[in-house]
Length: 169
Image 1: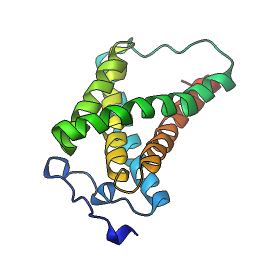
Image 2 (image 1 turned 90 degrees about the horizontal axis):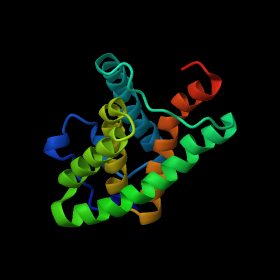
Image 3 (image 1 turned 90 degrees about the vertical axis):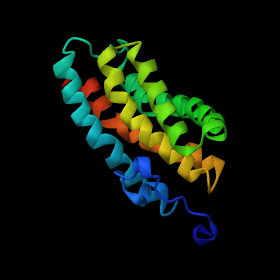
């Protein structure tokens, strides 16, 4: 089935990213690639942001650790992906693939900056990747286009969530 699809070539503006990120094939391998593309650069951005704005980290609610883990690893990825996907469908129709991805990631960075300025400096990058995942897999299926970014987002949040609930942050 994948060979029958019109594969999207890697857009020139995003040419620094792996070509596999723009090919909706091998979902498990794709999730690993997308997670690595989102997670490792966000660690670097987090280190930079914490140096620039050391006292501006996001505040998380004082709730049971299990609930906090659920909120960060399941609830937030599901809700944010549903919002992101709806917006991306409109943005892509109006402006095309690359502008939609860039506007989406910028919008998510701004939205998260409202809670904590340093967070917005970090968050835009993973949302750039999540947006690419959504639009790339939209070629195959709308359900998968929503599901895979939710999964990558949940994996993105898992490590930091585990640090938060363990008190090691």
